[in-house]
Image 1 (tube, rainbow, N blue to C red):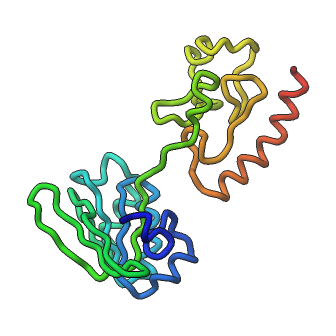
Image 2: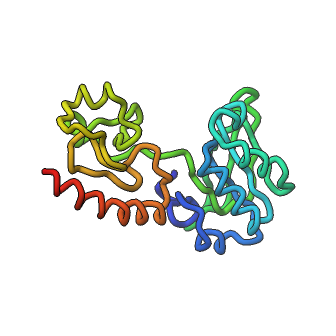
Length: 207
C-alpha cells in the first residue's frame, strides 16, 4: 500500500517542491516530532487544511513548545491524537486517506492526495556497530555527546577530548543524518562537512 504511492502521494520531505504539488488542497502529516511540526506549519501556508496524525496522546513529549504553539494557533491545522492511517486509496496516484482513532475505533476518510510521513528514520549504521560508538537509536555519537565513560570504554588514547563531530576513533568524523543529535537537514549536513574539513586537517597533524 505505502510503496505504491511513494512519490505520487506519499512524501518524506516537505520542501517548496512538494508544497507546490498540494497547494490549496487538504494534506496529512504523520508524526509528532519537530520535523512533523515544521512540515505542518510550512504546509499550512500553502494547503487548505493540514491534518497532523499522531499515535500518542499529544505533542508535549516529542515536539518543541514553539512548534506546538504555532500548530495550536493555526486555524487550518487540526491535531488528531491517538490516530493512525488505516488505508491509502487511489489509482495511479493517491486520492483518499482513511484513518482510525486507536481508542474508539472510529474511522474517517478524507479526499487527501498528499501524505507527509515524518515519523523518523532508522540510520544505516549497523555496519559500524562494534567499531564506532552508537546511541540507543543507532546514530553515531560524536564530539560533546561523548561522555568520559564512553571514551574510556572505547579506548580513547589522546589527552584531548574529541573534536566537534569526531567519533570514538581519533581522526574519524561523522556529519549529516547519521550523526546523533544532528538537525537532519541537507543545508545543515553541508555546513557540518565544511566545518569538519579544518578539523580533519588538525587531527591529521596529530597522528
